[in-house]
Length: 608
Image 1 (tube, rainbow, N blue to C red):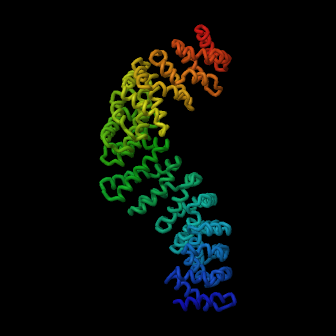
Image 2: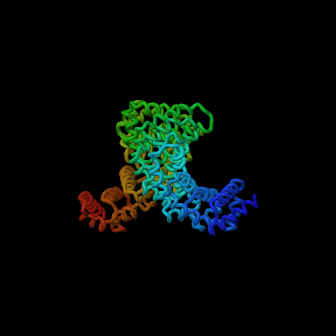
Image 3: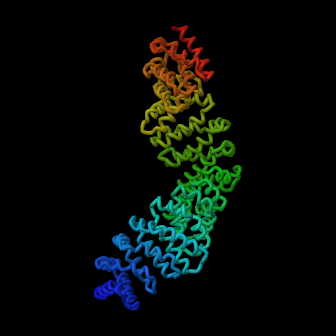
């Protein structure tokens, strides 16, 4: 073989000096055979002799040999070390020119050659981009798209593959293809060539890559991609093919317009079928598919319109099927069922209907199953659902009567921040406007102790914020001396004072109101903590800071008045010359603030 290859290479090097077509064709056949026998060795030999430098001339004068020349380049470019060599030999511009050929075999081999040179090669991609190769390939795909004969189908597959190799893992090149209009053309291909497996698979790979880009979603939404993908999904029996379609559906379903299109195209029914067919199976691939299908189902419910369409006033068959997942013995379905309820519970009407129809009990039973050594993701999902259901005022007392607070408190010892966060949010929603519940929970020293501990969870800002807010809410909604005492004795006051300095106005306000109630109900017991936490200095800062909102200034002045009954606090107020600060606020543009400033000034003057 070595002798034949050397002879062929020598002849090819002399080809520019003129040799017969037959002799040239013989050389090319010899090279193709050598590449087929040992691609790496033959490619190295060709590089050594510098034969690639002869090929641009052969490509630039189309002849019967042209497809073989392009085929040789395609074979050589299968080797990573040869792609840069192909670019340096100047092969890209003549190859791109050949994309305007009318000969199918020339186009096929040229598409292969360009695709292989681009594969994982920045140098190759840049050269193809400079020569306008992507645009030429795209225009060719457009013109060939309506033809469904097998040879054209094969060519289209190669050309789509070339564009994928050209743009894979490169956001700017993918964006370039999107701007060209590749997406509608590929969607059209998927519809016209649905029976051509290699081509549909290539389209799916392309969609999977392009769908990751946010800029692609609008273009996808303007096509009938949802319908095409759902039709294709229905035809699949093999796990791998379904998986390929799932990989496209997941990024597309992040877009709310496409969510609705997928629901209308019947994707949900397909997903429910997957769940029912894989539920009893213990095969790894079926478990994976069950997870993918149920996760995608939850994702579709994140869109307001798609969610409401599936809810159907609480009578939708999909809604009912998803509810049946909650009591399942399968953790993945329990998780998906709870997350689905949380997503359905995104407006008051849905929440009220679900509480009326007994969903709370299902969620409580699910949580009870996960108290000891439970599944954290299921705990988190079920608590999320309960938190959302507790938002409408009419649901709170019903949920409290159903024992939600008692079950939620069983997770108080959880060391998992996501569970802690949802637990706190659920309790805070439940006690909002519910004085008795706030009183009962606020007098629970174990709960208050845990809240104070979490108020110091600096590594978990969400847990820390929610703990502070719940501590404040227990005081604000109960207005109970017992609760105030429990919080003071549990060392909670300093955290509420710190909360008053939060960057979030709503948290500042909640803290100031709670501190006002503490001062009004048990100033003597709180006095030491107020002094230790520098409350008066903080109030001074809030009142002098021009950025403080009117509500903050108003509640700070109310609190100042409440502190005057304490001698040490009164002294601090005098030392910091609060009268001057308050007197300036009498001319504040907000009437409530200016009025409160007058009242506060009178109080301070009377007690000075």
